[in-house]
Length: 142
Image (tube, rainbow, N blue to C red; front, side, top):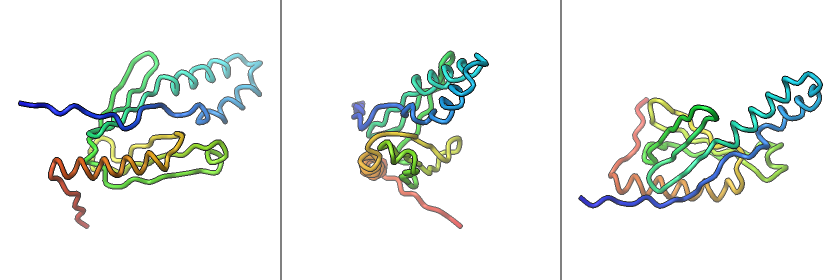
């Protein structure tokens, strides 16, 4: 049986700008020492958060000491939303929110990424192509 190799669409991790408020508070209270440890931990959490999107699935790997890997088949994506909160827009970042039919992850957020508009469009095309290949259609019943 011939297997299809996956093509990478995007690979990256969220920006450290997601920790901005934490960093500011930790600098203000750095004389307590514990905020410095909190800031370092938050830095490591974002640094080790890897997201890979292929033409078949989204793979998210998180964890500093222990690792968790979640996968989402692209044909399960129901809706793609682009969020550009004011603060993130100031630094050229945006969030992508995926509404899915996956039982364990009904909402998947890809936070604080560059060029979110472009990624959203590439993701939309990949979702449609994957549904066509799998011959799957999303149907909602109210």
